[in-house]
Image 1 (cartoon, rainbow, N blue to C red):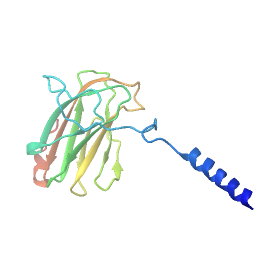
Image 2: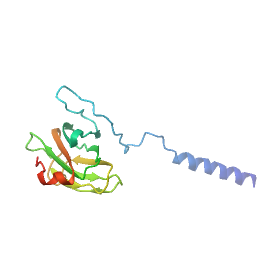
Image 3: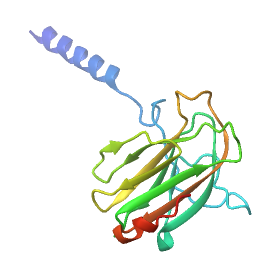
Image 4: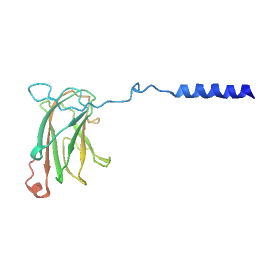
Length: 164
């Protein structure tokens, strides 16, 4: 009986030690850098920001971003009292494979894909994530500079909407 108790204890120790996983060693974990610091004089964001927080003073912003190959970029912004988002992506590279692949709402539901531009009515106020990535159906991985332009609109403003 005493030997059975010792055997059960050894088995429990072996099983629990086999399940131990050192924190931070998961290759699938991706850390998002939370920065909007300027990389240089040209107002281009650093190469590796996975998440970029943007303020939209006056409801508008135009931001240069550098994207590495296979890098997904999330632009986080607050909808405030606005009703609609109009966003577009621009690049001097005619072969730029970039797309707005989705938008993640404050309630964690997502919608998309959208392409190079979108007009989106906010169902609620809060922080939204504009997800920018390569269009997997359109071709190869892409690296380069692009510009995201965003404009927040109220219902009254939509009729005179600025089409980027």
